[in-house]
Length: 391
Image (cartoon, rainbow, N blue to C red; front, side, top):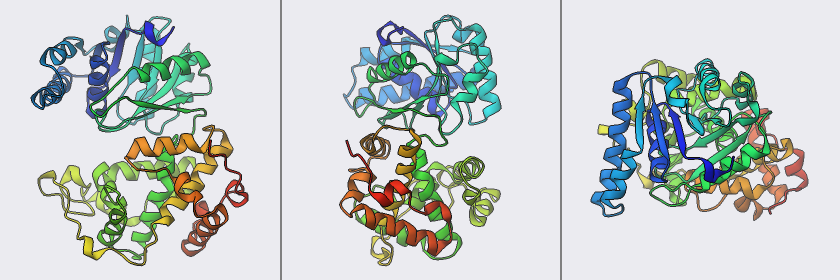
C-alpha cells in the first residue's frame, strides 16, 4: 500500500492528542473515524476540533468551506470494532498505559482489514510489544505527534522490531501529506525501538539534571529559567516541566528508571508535589503559580550568572551519541532536525556543541557527572573520540 492509497483513518482516543491528529488528517482530505469509550468524549473532541477550525476561519487563515468540509470528514464512534473495520490506517492515541494499548492493538488487529497499518502515538512505550500481540507486526509502528498537534511540526516515525521497510516508507510519506497551522509536518525516522525515541530521549538527561539540581538546592528555578530564556529559549526547563505536567514528568522518570538507569528515579520534591496535587499548569500550581492557566511571570533580572546553559547542550549531544551508537537514528543531523522541529529551537544540540569542540563537550559532561555523582552523564566513547558524522 502506498501513502496515496490511504483514504480512511481511525483515530483511537478523542483527547488532547487524538482530536488534534483527527483534525490534521481531516484537513488533508482523509476520512476520519474518531473513537472514544463514551459518546461525551467523542462529542467533546469533535467540538474542540470545530472550535479550532472556527478560530482559523475568524483569523482568515482558513476558508469557511474548507473548515466545514474537514468537519464533514470526521465521524464519531464508541465501538472500536466498528471504528477500524474498513480503515487503511489506525493511530492509537489512548492514555500511556501499556496494557490498555496492547488491548487496543489486539482488538484492532482482529477487526481491521488485512492491509491496514496500525500505529501508536505513544511518546515512550515499546512499539515492539504492541506489534507482538498482533498477526501483522510488519504493519505496526509508532507515529508520534507532539502536543499541540496543530502547532508542533515534528512527527517521529518509529520502527518496531517487526516493522517492515514498506510500512516505514508508506507512513513517512503519509506524514509528508499533512500540514498544521504552522506548515508542513516534519517526519523523522527512528530506526530502532528505544525508550523515549529521539526527542524525549534527548530531554531525559536534562530532566534528570534539573531534578537533581533542585533536589540538592543548587538552583532557584526562576533564576535558572531566566538565564535560559535570556539566550532566546521560549521557556526555561522548570517552566516546561510545569507546562507538560509534573505528573507526566514523574511517570516519564519512572519509565526511564526501569528502562535506562535507576538514576532516573523521581526525586523527592517531584513526588511530594504530585502527591499534593501541585501538577503545574493543569492544576494552577506546581514549581510556579499559573493564575487562570496563564504563564508565570519570570523576572529576567534574576538570571543566574553561575549557570552555564551549555551544560544542557552538552548533555543533549552526549545522549544523542548514545542513539547513534545504538543505531536508533542514522545521523546527528536527524537528531538536530528532531530537536529543532519538536521544541522550536533555532539550532540542534550537535550544531551548537560542535563549535565548542568535541573534547570540550566530553570534558563538560564528565565534570557534571562527577559533581552530581550521576554516571548517566559520563561521556560516551563516540563523544570522547569526536567520531560524529554531522551529515
